[in-house]
Image (cartoon, rainbow, N blue to C red; front, side):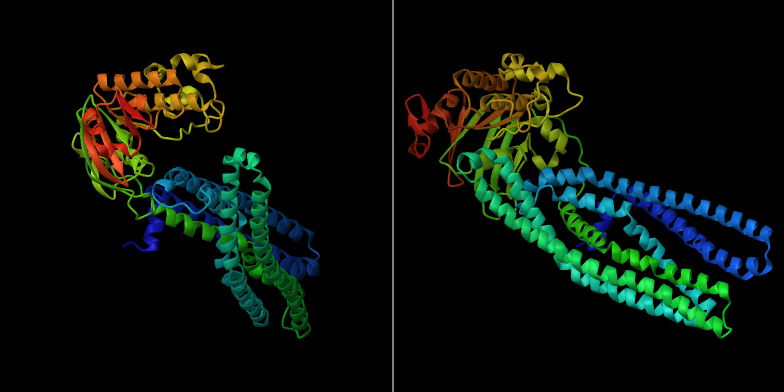
Length: 576
């Protein structure tokens, strides 16, 4: 088993990891020069107080002033470059993971039982990007220079060094207390935010039900309760952070004044020059600055660290697709052997022991009572749900052996609930392919018998369908979904209750589409609940309680008592 460290490293491509290392090394080098240049201010004050003022030399003052101005100009340029480098590093991480994050958002429901906000991975990636580009990470580049400033403090006088060292120890203690006080609250608030956002998405999707059944206020009460808990945890972590942050700022001001007092005492004793007092005060304050910055940005650090841990764990479930040898397109047979299926993240089988074979140019109607596994079979046939046991093969090759793009090109799928994307009608039919051939889009629409209907829309094929297809009726969405399933003339077409929202004209168009797939040598599998669909199907598969009860030619199977469960048999067909 890979360690978590290995898993985290494998999340980013090797070439990107090399580029990131170079970028971080460059930022660290810039930070080193910046911290060295920060010594210019104290040294300038030391020279002014100890050399320029006693000697009353204006040329020396002008020369020192020009030197300091040039040094600060370089300081500004390097600081700007460092900020831009970190911003670009954040962009590289975001660019490398954003596609994987979208695949997580789209693919998580197909692999695990989802118990969080589906958009949470995108929010976690944004937290990581913001932390890398923000001041929090740059404070860690300054942290290694604390010993350098501490050594300079000891060089000026050991008393000043011990003062700075004591404050550093206090800073470390405050940092530990900040982490201890905020870690669990931040973790719990993230979980509550996910739960609250999930409730908001459910309310958005079920707005009609909430309004029609008077559930809006009750849902709002749930939202408010979650929001109050979230706000309480956020306030608690903010209070802890501000408490220790305030102590840190006060200590830094105190140590700066204390260094002036210690310096004055040393001057009185003849152990230090007057100019060294001011220089030592600035250097001691600079020694503590990185720790103060880290404590000030601790909440963002904890959030980014927690986001990375959670995102890395989910990314491990979605490893990059392995390269697969291209296989010739399927043209002759669909074979299902010992197929057992369970919902994602659930070990309870909803389908088991299914066996059948279909040759090119044939069709299969799947019937049976509710919850008998019909839709689960449809999902497994197109690879949306993986098989726990058994196989679905196209021309003898299991679905897992096909590259995802090749498998998708050979299959068409019309689910029970037709979800269209917020794009045009034509783009939805073309499966969002930006390079789709317009002729292929029109051909799929014609095969589905929806071409004339689309031409009646305000902008034809360029008509926006709205979010989820809200601009279309249920029947229009189903017929456009059928055209999408037929796009590219796939070999295997799986239709889950394709006539659920169709009128008589739509059912006739569906029957013609099925006959067209069979005529060109394709295979159609349809979940059937209404009798009109069975007239064009060759084979019938009966499922009961997730098991195969019967399979064979339509008329033979429908004559058996086992087919009487649901739908009922009537002369000449099946009646819902």
